[in-house]
Each structure stands twice: as structure tokens, then as C-alpha cells.
Length: 79
Image 1 (cartoon, rainbow, N blue to C red):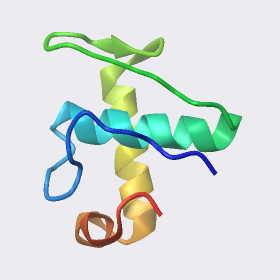
Image 2: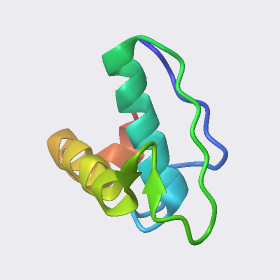
Image 3: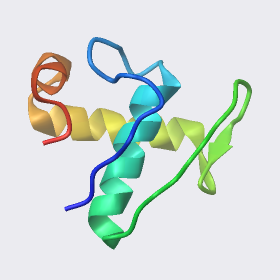
């Protein structure tokens, strides 16, 4: 299992914060590929890793939904 290292904490934030969605996406991609994933984004970017940012948010939203909602995610994080 690969971990993610974040530039900002993910607990207690919502998906409108790029560091939350991007970190979830990077972690999921690392799990899928077994490789370290490094991503960065800046204010105003509309794509990341070749995907529209809105798609990244939806991927993160689905992951959180599967975890039982944002409160459970904020409690346990990416496990």
C-alpha cells in the first residue's frame, strides 16, 4: 500500500479545498498503480493529471461516500 504526503491537512476540510480532492485522487492512483504519485496544482488550474478538476472532485466525492460520508472520512482519513 502506498501513502500520500500532503501539502495541507485533509481533516476537517471540504471537497472545495483542492488539497483534499487532489490528495484523495493521488492516494487512490498510488493504490491502483503501486507507484509514488506526485501532483501539484495552482489557483485557476482547471485540469490535473490530464483530467478536468471537476472529475477529480467527483472521484474524491465517491471515495468519501463509500467511506460513509465526510464525517467518517474526517475521523479515519485514507484508510
